[in-house]
Amino acid sequence: MPTNRILAVVTNAGEYERKGYRTGLWLGELTHALDAFDEAGLAYDIASPQGGYTPLDPESLNPSVMDKAIKARYEDRAFMDSLKDTKRLADVRAEDYDAIFLAGGHGTMFDFPGSQDLASLAARMFDQGKPVSAVCHGPAGLLEARLSDGTPLLQGRKATGFSWKEEEGVGRDDAVPFNLEQAMKDRGADYTKAMMQQSKKVVTDGHLVTGQNPASARGVGDEVVQLLQAKAEAAA
Image 1 (cartoon, rainbow, N blue to C red):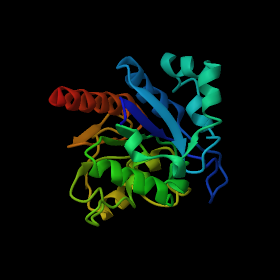
Image 2 (image 1 turned 90 degrees about the vertical axis):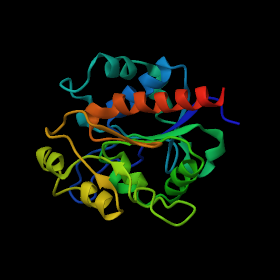
Image 3 (image 1 turned 90 degrees about the horizontal axis):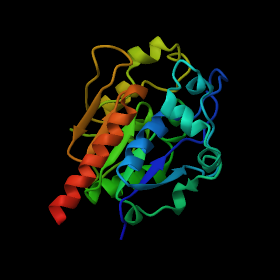
């Protein structure tokens, strides 16, 4: 049985297929959530669709977005080395984890939707009543997830993710393979977004937790922690 262990999922895609821009994991979206897990005493493993190396979006290393907490992780050699050797999702069992967290970065738009391993894992964990969470472009990994009764995981559930206005704002609307906001709505999600672009927004609906953008990553991590703590208290 799992004991307070979370599976964090990251991308293997390092390039926009249309434009050839470099992309990958948005580092702070992973590290801010992991900070919340660490502070709560929760263990975690990092996995990706193919396993092995996860590239970093170079823009996520810009000093304007790299705060002290992200910088501390970036300067931690052991942590950064762990991003070169992530677990392969096909080798992961839902039963071994208490929650799943899908980190973002534009790379996820290219490999998360096509990963049946990810879709199946997220759906299985949701069916088991475990927190399923994602931030920014991470919800791309939930688009094809279907529950045991065949319904889309997102159908009828309140959720958020990187908005199309934000996509336009960062100049990637002509490079991404699809409109994430619209794709979530097409799967039946009750999608909402913050009034101001790039401002924090976290939406919790039962044991589904989603965050809109990089500013929301810590909030998603905190919500997952609260859900796990509440579950533990209820079982005590």
